[in-house]
Length: 193
Image (cartoon, rainbow, N blue to C red; front, side, top):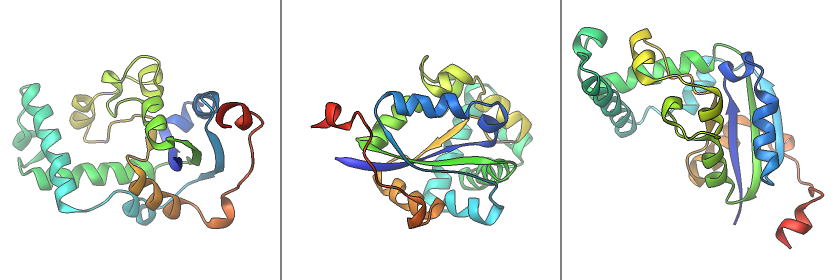
């Protein structure tokens, strides 16, 4: 039941001085911070973070096409293609460009159902649709329409591992073993024993 999960405060969250507020959201629910560092990673590192698996990229492209259809925009005119896989590759490149554009605060949080808990606190991927009170719902209103128009990624402040397998991969990608700490929070006995 105890899981580890990765949270990245993206360059927009760092530049807007939201790191402390974001950290406090996870601490307040009883998650334990077991690793923390500020890094400015290169595009090669970020390319390992964002998968280039064809099925995933096609699904990203399909979501982008749905946004274009919903708002009556022509993907061929705006992006030069309506091929979901090609559009997914574009979005991946936008993500790589953005995550490598400035400092990132990388963290590992540990706790009971940490992956799902962090995802709930972070809120939906699209800030304009994220629930009020979540990190994205509280601090951002960016939308895919604006992002696609500007040919950039949606600026949604944070990344959170999507599932336990992704979390295990990301822990190894972002941290060395000697950067991860084991200790007891003062309130663990009250919360979990």
